[in-house]
Image 1 (cartoon, rainbow, N blue to C red):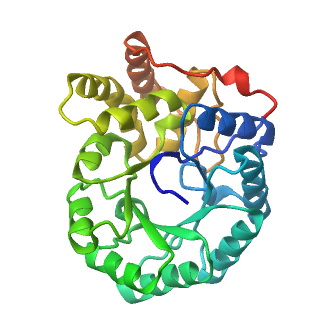
Image 2 (cartoon, one colour; image 1 turned 90 degrees about the horizontal axis):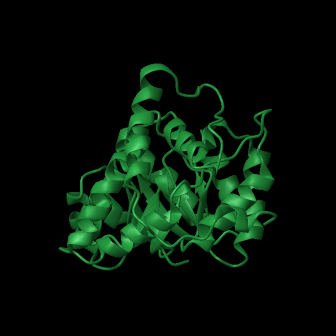
Length: 307
């Protein structure tokens, strides 16, 4: 498992009955990889993992592993209980996933002793390469740099951190303590360039679901600090990337997929599709982005039909 490059946090495609649409999911995954993404991240927050039944999760992983054909597939591991998370981690390994993103438990957030026990138990239960997911805004659990270092010292298969606090100082803090021991990936779309300049080497991305070629290009440009092209490209992309940072990020990103012809806005309840002022604001951002979209070499979505 190589925790570098653009790793799309894949949305989960639903049909008109809100069942998982595996044919579309396969085409979407193949399109992402075909446009330069390093691997696939399945079952995460953007993938509406909390609304998926256990058997649905396994079927999604099986589809992704088949389509990836040896390229990395990463399973996001989160559950209400530690035992359920361990079970999913074990089954993801059996299915053929290359790595795991280990999340805090759903709903329950508490002190370091209990949160450490949870993630440590999951990491220890697998031989797969693991990434720790730090998103204090969403999960109300904040893994501080010295705690990350403690986990890294105890688990040889902890190889990366997805840093989604939106505070790029966290990247520097982890590097000060651990050097190059862990790969650090940006986990919030609108701090990608800042995060790379601080030392991040990968991006677990959201808007990539609609714009894989542009996302790969942005990461490349971010690795060339100071160029006029990098800033101009970032400035174009930022209004869209900010859709990844608000509570309705799933609805917004799926809506953008629908507008670009590479997905559907369908979401599972309790989420509802956008309407009213939120929809109008999204339309305004999208209209401006389309009018000014830079030219980037891209393989068409249709080329991956039947994947």
